[in-house]
Length: 235
Image 1 (cartoon, rainbow, N blue to C red):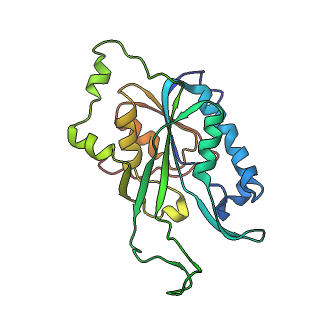
Image 2 (image 1 turned 30 degrees about the vertical axis):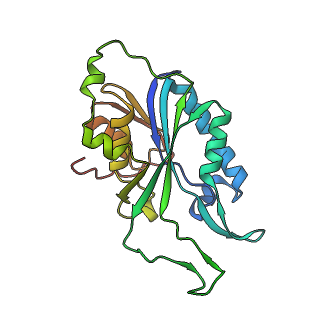
């Protein structure tokens, strides 16, 4: 992201291609867990460079389930690996959010009917991992106008700062990998102020950028493909 100067971004919100999801194999080059995370690591290194001291980085990622000859059916822990990689580069992990995707399939089930032991837990959560750059909070001048103008209500605080979010997934997300605008809307309000620069290094349908601009932030995004813009409705 050579167009961005060091320490020029205040908040990063993104949802990268999840390692070990079959549709991303060709893009990554090899269907190998460690290799795919090493590819993502190069993007995370650039994210750290452009993030201001005390800036926040939010990464929506899910674990992957897949059958591989060496293991059979197994869960590949993308969230755990992400935390390990970002902590190694001195991005401080904070308490994550568990995004429970509201689904029309409440009885989704994998396995052998009603007979133990060969059934598997249904995967209905993803993670929003949250990191801070450095061990100190962002500094603001006393009575900073943009900061006070960016405040949230008590009702918003009580809802947004719970660890589990129940939010409907974006329409057609399985095919398009889009995520709902409510996710960046909350995160931008929670972790940035008016006038800040918000970056999505895997911009996709530009959802984060569009929501950022609607909230009077500067939205910046990168991607290797040009997809149609998301419909962010009344957010």
